[in-house]
Image (cartoon, rainbow, N blue to C red; front, side, top):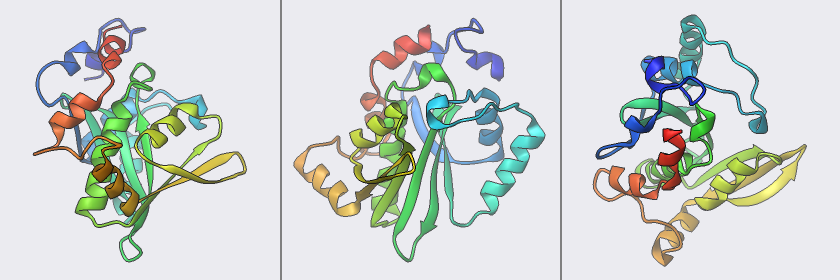
Length: 210
C-alpha cells in the first residue's frame, strides 16, 4: 500500500488517485485508516509537527486512544479510497453544541492544494447540519500561514491571539448566512462528493503527478 502512494522522491506518481468519479471522501476513522495515515505521514514544521517513526504498534496505540476518547469524532480524508489525511472534531460537547476542528494532510505534495479545505467543508456540513453544533472552533500557530488561509477560506474568523497561536471560530449562524448569501460554496449536493471534487484546486492534480 505504501508503494502506491510514494512521493515524488520515491518515484511513483500519485495521479491515479485523482482519476474517475468521487475522488474525495471523508469516512469514519478505523484502525486501517490510522495505520495508512501514519505510514504516509510527513511532519509539517509550520504546524509544529515533530518527526514520526511509523510502526503498526504505535499506530494501534494511537487509534486506541482516539477511539476511547468520547469527546472526539475522527474522520479519514480519502482520495480514491486511499487515506491521505485526518480530520477531528475534538473537545466535542453536544450539550453546549461546540467542538474544535483539527485537520492534517499526510504528504507535503498534497498540502496547500485545496484538498484539506474541501474535506473540512464536508465535515462542517456534517457538524452543523447533521450533528446540530452551534459553533466550531479552530487554532493554528501564527506562522502556519497555510492552515490559517484554509480556515479563513471556509469561513472561520479570528477571535484572539495568545502565546503564538491564533484562535478562530465559525458559528452555525454564520455558516448558514454564508450559504444563503452565496459567499461560499453550498454544502455538497446529494452524497456530497461531486461538490467536494469540484471545490479542490485544479492544481492538485499537477502536484500529485509530480
